[in-house]
Structures are given as C-alpha cells and as structure tokens.
Image (cartoon, rainbow over all chains, first blue to last red; front, top):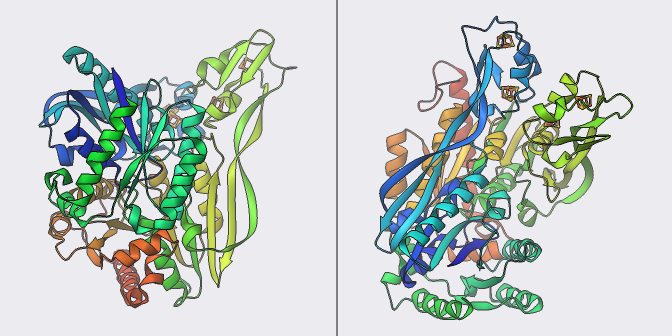
Length: 284
Length: 300
Ligand code: SF4
Ligand code: SF4
Ligand code: SF4
Ligand code: SF4
C-alpha cells in the first residue's frame, strides 16, 4: 500500500483542485481529506456519507453547579480566563485541570469534548474518508492522524493499493501528522515570492523527516522568473519536478460549478495535469 | 476624533487574497487617517512584510512562563508530573525533568507543589518586531521554529501594537484557535472570500466562528467574476453585510507574485477600500447605540 500526500507551503496554491484531479486519474484508491480545519475536497467529489464517528478532543473542565460553593478560586487560578460566573467557557478552556485540583468542593471534573466528526463516504472517484472540526477547536493534528488511520484501514479492507491524501496547508502540527509512513509528498508550489519561501520551508521539514518529495508548479506562467527559481531550488535539492500546470481560467470556472477541471479534457491545465500524473506514476 | 477602530481581516482559509487585501487596506487608510497600525498576526508564517516592506526598528523577545525546579527543595514526590495535563514534567529519582516545549504555562505545578519547590522561569517563544512604512506603524510577530502554541505571541503582539486610530489585524488562515485569539480584540471582522464553492464553504466556517464570538462582521468578495451569486446568497441568508467586491484581474495575480498588494497594482481601487472603512465605522458606531447592527451579538 502506498500513500501520496498532497501538500503546499500555504493555502491557495490550488492544492485541493489538484488533489481532486489526481483522484479522478488514479484507479483503485482511497481518498482522504486531511485538511480537517477547512476540508474542501468534498465540494468537488460530492461524497455520500455512509458512516460517521464522533471525534473527541482534549478534555475540558465541567463545573457541577450543585457541588459548587461559589468560592471563586477556580476562576482566580485559571490562567486562560476560561471560567466566568461559575461556569466554564469551553472554547477557552485548555483542559489543564488546575481548577479541578484547586476546587475545595470537588465540583470540577474534566470530560472529553466532542470537537468533530469523521466520515466514511462513497464518491464517483472511490471511497473517501474526511472530517469536520468545530471552529476554534485545537488538536487538528490528532484528527488528521485519525483520518489517515481510517483511510489505511479502508484500503486494507477493500484491498486497494493507493491512498491519495489532500493534506493541510502550511508546515504546522497538522502537516507533521501527515508525514509518518507517507510514501511520497507531492508539493503544489506557486510561483511568487511567498510561494518560493513557503516551498523552501516545507522542503526543509520533509527532508528532516526523510519523506521523499516531488514538486508540481501551478500557474507557472503567472511569473516565469519565479518558476525558474523554483526549478533551480528543486534541482539544487535533487527533488524531482513532476511538471508545470499553466494558469487556466477553466480551472476557476469549473471550481465555481463545483466540478473537476479534468471534465474539460482539452483545457491546458487538464493536459498538463495528465502529464504530471504520468510522471508521478514513475515515482510510485 | 481620538477614537480607535480595530479591524481584523480574516478568511476561512489561506489563498483568498487576505494579506493582499489587509495590506491594501492599511496603505489606503494610512493616507487618510492619522495613526494607522498594521499587525501581522499570522505569526507562524508572517507574509505582510512582503507587501509592506517596512524598516524594522525594534525587536523584542517574547517569553512565556515555564517551571524551574529547585532540586534543593524537591523531594521527588512526583505530584507535579502527575497533575501536568500536557506531560511537560517527569520526575525521575534525583532528576526532575522539564520539557518546556510541551508546557502550556497553566501554573498548575508551581501553584500546587507541596514543597514550593518550583520557581517560575522564562522561555523565549518568538519575537515581536516593529517599524514604519511612511507614517504607518508596522508590527509583526515571528514564532520560533518548533514552538507549538502561537496564542501567547499573538497576545503579546496585540498588547504592544494596538493603539488609537485604525488598527488592521491580518489574521492567520483558518478558524482554529490562533484565529480566535486574533479576532478576539477586534471591533469588526472583515471576511475575505472568493466566489467559488470552496470560498463559500470556508466563509461559512469563518462566519460561524464570528457569530459564536458575538463579533460584528462583513464580507468582501475577492476575485469577483461578475457572478457572485454563491456568496451573495450566503450573505443574505446569514444576515452578513456584503461590503463590496474586487474584480478578478490577472494583473493583480501577477503583482502578488512580485510582492505588490492589490491597491498598488490597481490604484483606482482606493475609493473602494475607503468606502469599506467608512461602512465599518458606521456599523461599529451603530452597535454602540441602541440595539445591534443586525446580525450577530448573541451569546456574549
Ligand atoms: S473552585 Fe469549586 S467551589 Fe469554588 S467556585 Fe470554583 S467550582 Fe465552585
Ligand atoms: S481546566 Fe484549566 S483552562 Fe480549563 S477551566 Fe480549568 S483551569 Fe481553566
Ligand atoms: S511536586 Fe514539587 S516536590 Fe513533588 S516532585 Fe514536583 S517539584 Fe518535586
Ligand atoms: S505550568 Fe502547567 S503545563 Fe507547564 S509544566 Fe506546569 S503543570 Fe505542566
């Protein structure tokens, strides 16, 4: 079983459109949307949810009003201003438990808080695992790990040999959760000053964790000079270049209708993406 | 008027043109208002300096509190390690260990240690830098690599940078806790989106967040193609005011790649930004009076 994770140093590079295109090109695979903070792949792949599982984050404090003597010590000691009027504002609680240890009446306990859901779905492009996280919830890294775990279990159960994961943007904790046991990170790079910088940082992270990487440059003709810069960067670090996808208003138009741009086979972006897929298969 | 207005520019996700718009807003405002400060609160990946190349004049290291165990007083009872919810402490016989990068500075261990053996120490997590671009104040935070929690740095940045006049906060992407922390101090949240199903979906998440926080908000559509029905519908349904739109322009995308914000490429858009600022002031002012400006305001 192989897993490709699609990453980008930052959001807005076209990572999700590209992941959806890969999902349509590859055969016999499981799809995973690991961009759990703002999952978007479902907007193109239109999954039908068949199973849903609750996801629990770190425990947060609860105050039992019947046992609370209203002494106010919990609010005084809470470093995160999460307690007001003898009740806990869950979205501010870090779950440190200091209040529970301090409360003289034993009125506080910590309980896990449901902060999201994991879904197993069917799509026209194959089975898919995705998730939703409530706004402001922490620990999306753990939810990413959960999505990937279920995707693997599904690949095993259905005897599918490939997992295509749409990863989170950036290089933070959710991205790190995508790296263990990942076979290849496909980086969607954007030719801009910020894009080159983001790519550099991401490549450093991948090198550090010894995850093989390959790069595709999206909207390469927007800034030809930057595209060259990215190509040189890749050559210097011996990172294979899978190809370049030109700026193509078809992509945006299809996206507006919630369609994959491969549905317009003659569009320049579609042609380029099929070539990228050819190159990508060589690396698998 | 000596009043102050703090506008957070946020988007459900990266890549909507949020930073280009926030920096444009700061540029336009600074030509019109006396004190304008731009604060790049995306401390994990600050990018505002690309569009606002300010000369940085000052830099301050920001610390958080972490425990320091006094081995003279510690009797290795292990209580601190047992109560630390983040596994930042381990007590081996004769060797208390502190993993400062896991510590959330909750104060539990030094408050509760029976021997009073824990002192409050400091750990640097990043820097706050400031400078000027013309007379605009520029502020940014940069988190040190490997530091897991950005909210304390965002707090420190805002405590230093927020002042009278207009403050523009460039929020991190997403709706997770650094964003919540960034917009908390704002008078108004400007949500930037683009007219696609992705844009709408991310906007729905961001709108849910500001509603939950009881903050007034409005929407600006970036890269409008003329047909923005998908976003207009949402604004109508949710009661969020649509402040305006910026048309899609290839030149703006090219300018972005070269480190120019939208208004530098399209100076004729300046009146749009000024108009939004004016509307925002009116909405915020109206809210202070009787009733609210309509949509949010619940659950405070
Ligand atoms: S510390 Fe316990 S008893 Fe005191 S106010 Fe808090 S919950 Fe109530
Ligand atoms: S668990 Fe910690 S953060 Fe939550 S309310 Fe108690 S003291 Fe505050
Ligand atoms: S609680 Fe205090 S005395 Fe006990 S191990 Fe920790 S530092 Fe030492
Ligand atoms: S301050 Fe809180 S998080 Fe930090 S080590 Fe002490 S108990 Fe753990």
